[in-house]
Image (cartoon, rainbow, N blue to C red; front, side, top):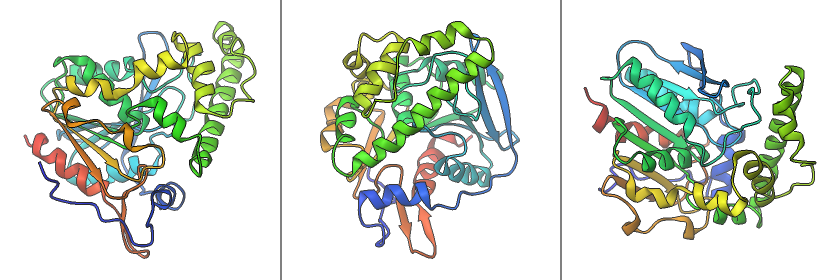
Length: 330
């Protein structure tokens, strides 16, 4: 189905790096009222913080942020503000340790971890089984969402889904971040992940979770890590039962799950995303009949900024609601 609202990049953000950096560094994040938090206890005795926005009986939208993001990320807040005006309720699943407080297990979040979204989905579904519900994932959160949808084999009662700037093939994306200007993104993300792990270990020791803290100590000194290949081999594979980084990337890349998705799903990718290469994109034969791939000319990584310098606009906040409305009408 052709896109009724094509993306046109702002002339002053004329490449993928500018499109990526401007909203991440310079966007004025909307002030969203009526946000409150619920802490859910997970089946393994840890916790997840869910941030809700909106009241009433309107449709619900579950949002999944990207790597080192949270419910405070600008792309999350921007959509929440739009959904609030539409009378929809949104809820953001902060991945473990991303809500401002380290979690209580050595276990982290990663690109293939779908148990937590399954738990949150089941919790929300039990509370309101008849309310239309959508899910949106960005970057890592998009990979998690697509993998989870593909694993469900038609068992999920979700109305619609959208995934944006997804690292569909993890090994290709990890290698891309080792080259050229993209190394700056890699350095920034790895810095955030090292802080995340350092704070988690300190929290576990301080809180008396010595066995969990020991699991992190057993990983060794991570200060030398300078690539995602190294980080994912040492930390992600080491903590989550993968044989090595190759096993993690192979099992967790979402592209292989697209043919199994039965929920109406829109995937939005930019052709100049500095986290990707063209080889990441799936062929039409890899998509189920429920999946629509939209590749824009320009947009960067979770950027998609149009408009003027004085009044930029964020295209995702138009395109995503337009797609969701077709399926969330009650």
